[in-house]
Image (cartoon, rainbow, N blue to C red; front, side, top):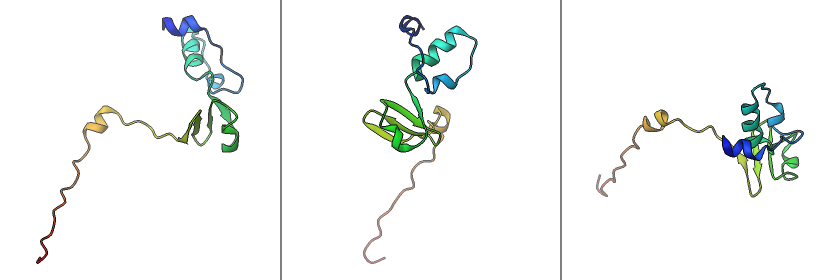
Length: 94
């Protein structure tokens, strides 16, 4: 939090952070720090006009990366995955 407070970066107009409502000054500073430069765009063509941008369909552009973000799996979900099925080779005569 010290790093966040020391930067005191304000959210840019039309950023995702500008859409977050909070009365807590620490929460405001943290949101502005994380997504204060993540610009909200109306369509995919507008994404490249910004260093970091997102559409309402979660299409994300980040300098040299563009794509749709998938939600991360939690550790509980990841460890509970089923093992891959075993694949056996058939013998030529079978």
